[in-house]
Length: 225
Image (cartoon, rainbow, N blue to C red; front, side):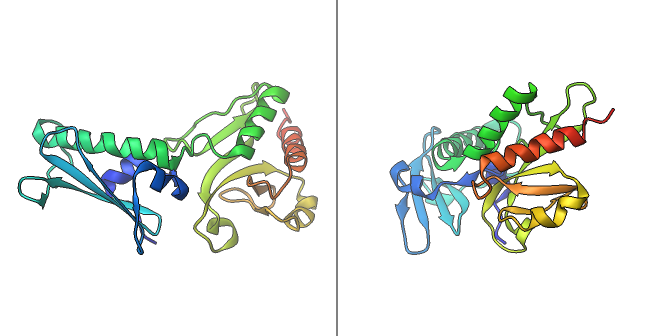
């Protein structure tokens, strides 16, 4: 699977592409993907951004020479190369703001889940890792988890597929595992005990009422002192 180049990956992280936003932003559609050309804020430099198979790559061009400028890539903390890199970063951030989903916020159903938990249990999400697309919900007193939302490839649950989805892990009664796994959109838990936890894809395949009832059950099961 193709991955982002290191410099671009640092800016875009796990943000998911909104392909429908590319042409309105200014990208030109080609048979192989999309291309965008723009001057940078450092005089004499421009950038060409390519998006192919959903993966962004870019080149910074020194206009007078018509050659790629790469000195900003790597561990550059000061000097001219640093300023060129910051100008390129500024362009990438504009593209990210317009053409990518903010995975730290997640989709609509993830937002409804956060709202339900906040209003029902007075619990807000907590970030325990550097990756802002992973966050947990914990009891206010015991600090035990009763839910975790992650932004992952669907293939990690069903064995294939590259689409990025919001996934909610909740604790269940082990006796209910087979019944729950028979529901479309519910899978064996990702990165947690598969006997006691399940993963629910938050793409509206599982209706809110069912998701909320699973959250309530998980809250009760993890509330043991």
